[in-house]
Image (cartoon, rainbow, N blue to C red; front, top):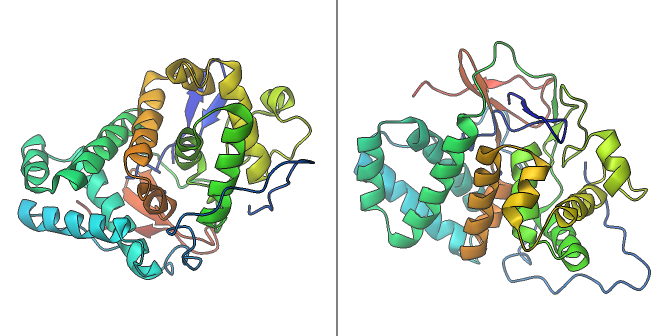
Length: 307
């Protein structure tokens, strides 16, 4: 991931390589706070596996339009199925991630062919993800060296969703925006590292900004960081003016647009959340895109085949 500097926020946002191309802490309930809402059937599934082994690359999408559209439709069916096996969900999410990455950077004519061939439900999701990918890709260039990060297993999706919902109850910010920011900033907690501007934690706060919105919490704790993000957004116009609030999180119209696309997709298709949770850390290096597996840098980065 390359780094994008937010002038007013003063944060170098870690959005680089996560272009689609998807630290664990226990939630601290406040005195008298109600427990999280009952989980949906999707969330009651057994805990999914995290990233595949480092040597196991995600399935590479097809290069002809009809086959790729069929792959994306099958992936969409799996992600929407409440009884889908965890490994099937992971593979579907990874295929979707790589397909969208390819479509965002590929030939417009090929993209139109694929989109015309998709089921309407799948097409809506893919279009939004392509728009987000294009916006994020335009913010960064491929980097000359791999990043000084650690890649760790993220908190389970049900745990994170409880944090998002808790922040929504307390701040009024829809949970999908918090999940979308988390996805863009650190791939939902997979990336551990301090940005070049000094931003820290799963939601990438500068310590000075954390002092304003952290309320004594731990900048590296996912529950505390997600709640602080909600406070920051509320202080700048959320939930009534989300574009303005997101701009204060990072003053880039492209950043705002990408976060908005992911949030809208989760609002229209809540099952998209568990797909995003499985998205892997992809890093745009000058030699090509690399998968940064859990365990990186001890586990080496794995180059994807060239498009």
